[in-house]
Length: 294
Image (cartoon, rainbow, N blue to C red; front, side):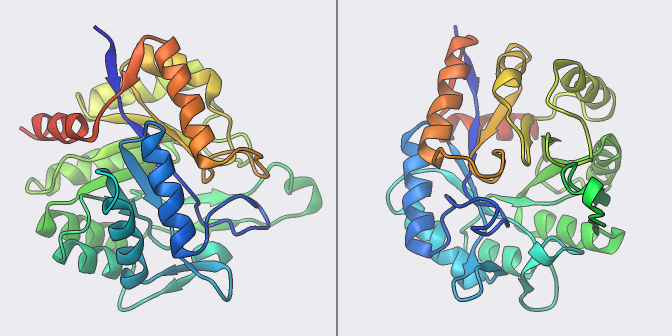
């Protein structure tokens, strides 16, 4: 029997056209790419929405609602938004009182099942920019922000999608999850990079290091490989062999990627199948998360 592997499509990210020319920016573009990614094999779609005039991320729940409803009108999928990258010019506008205002508004309307929650802070600098004096920035997730997200997730039964940029994120995320027993089980999204000087490169030994820590701190938790500015193709086979899920799409791909989201998802699916897996349906993802929360 083949292993059901969740495939998530991260279709745009915060980059703007200057770093990733192929990303969808307008709501119709986002909807079209989300639908195409699901048709290519994704059960999960992660997206950012934009102020079209400035070309920057704008975390407005009404924009997210348009994108989510547009995708789910045509395909059944888990579709979920990001949060502002505090500390960076890519953060966009924070609408309302805090970083989770839009998630709570969407949850109240029954539009989200997952939400981003990043349990930790870290330095972001590109390897290419270091020789040129690039200062980078600190991606900030203070404890009060993390707990705000936890409370929203607990209150509205939203699964936190943890971005694990550094191993300490796993330790903090697992410890905090135990402090919020009414919160749905988190997904541990292991973040690799070739472009940024944080975390691990996309190597099998690095995957094993993450998994050993997870076995101690969050045994049985759902795990996914992902990243930013990274080529994960060589890591998909080892991930499938370990029952680890896979993310693809233009948010994660090396900057200037010539492929679109449909093609990136299709390529990942081929590699999943070559490794003995198959694309999980969205009903299988939901059932697995329900079982993991028991």
